[in-house]
Image (cartoon, rainbow, N blue to C red; front, side, top):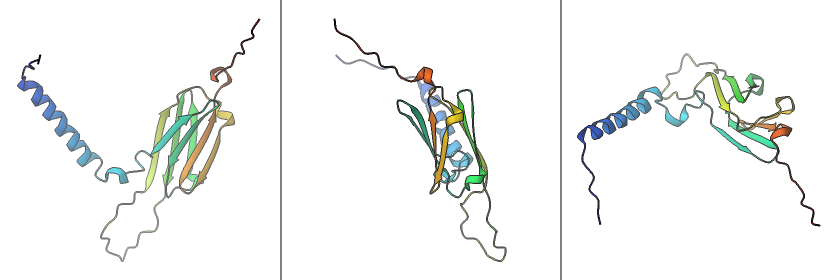
Length: 146
C-alpha cells in the first residue's frame, strides 16, 4: 500500500530560501572555504579512559604565540599568525594566506584537571593532553564469588 504526500508549495519556498541562505553564506562570509584556517582552527577531540586529547592544526603559528586556557568545562585556544614582510615592489597574482589572530572555544566532554595538562607543538599540530578528573574516571569493581 502506498501513501500519498500532500504537496505544499509554501514548504518548497522555505526550502529554497534555506538553500539560498546557505549558498550566500558560504560564498560571501567564507570566500576562501577551507583555506580560512585562522577564523576557526581545525580541531580533533577524543577521550580515553584517563585523558581528553585535543589536536589542533595551526600552520605558520609560533608556539610562543599560542595561549590555551580552561575555564569550567570550556577549552579556549587563542593565537596569532604574524604577517611576513610584504614585498612592496611585487605585483601579487594570488594572495590566500591569512594573517592575524584567531580563537576557538570548545566544550569539554568531561571534567579535566587543567593544572596537569600537557601541550606539545610539532609540525604545525598542537596536541593537548588533559587528564580527566578522578571523580569522572571509570572505576572497576571486582566481584567475589562465595
